[in-house]
Length: 364
Image (cartoon, rainbow, N blue to C red; front, side):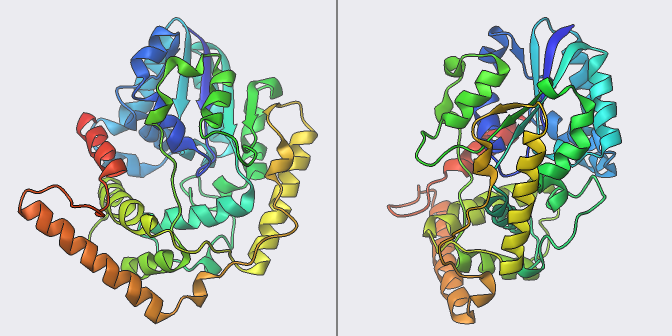
């Protein structure tokens, strides 16, 4: 039986992919250090989150996907040490689903711990809108986040982005001292700060894994984001999670639009104020409880003064055309290199994350 099971439930867009990209390549080293990543492969944690959240879409992920949660539980039951289960979509679970998950884990482990990585709500909100675009969404930023879904399948919604709402559902499932909150990192700290603090919660040495394996999810500029949104309106196909991840998220957005380093942006004023209120509520809730907090919770507050930034609705047709034409020129170079069996020339986007993703997909 496992001694402690750590369930890292998100939030989305708080460094979860970065942490997972370090942990999974170091799976064998973590196991030798006494920390198990249960399941057959990384995708089992996504599929397990779907099972826990009663998402019928798990049946479309392949014949083995619906059994992922059972595989995770079986591995946890058979390991003498600690275990880590990590996927950001767990945070969208209902209170009943969270309680059921913890109860099932409690049958095969001595202690269940919940781990939350966090981010101030305004940056999280704008980043999550971009992530929705990378998954083929077409919603304008002005219309995004105008409700709180009661559906555990709604992962790009305040349901999973609002730390206070997530705590409302998850905190009753474990004692407060077993709910660990990693506050946002202060400006200027090393990139590995999040991994170091995460390891501190798990009780392992940070150098157990190669932290250089991690990658940060970078942001698109305002014109690039609006261009992708309009491209999505015309796209056909790319209807599976795998195809969207490989082609829209990695190939198109992360490796061809993000490197343009466009202008940052904000949502509308009322959305900024909404994010500010949510940050205040989350901090008040944390201070009123006895959670294990790592870092400064004041960094969850949206600053009173913000620099001037554009809104995506201000992007002109001419700006979209400029981004789109550059994109066509880049893609033509990619096609030529591919057809002639050449490597991309100087200045062409490096395969980087897409190559890593393809290697991962071959393993799953």
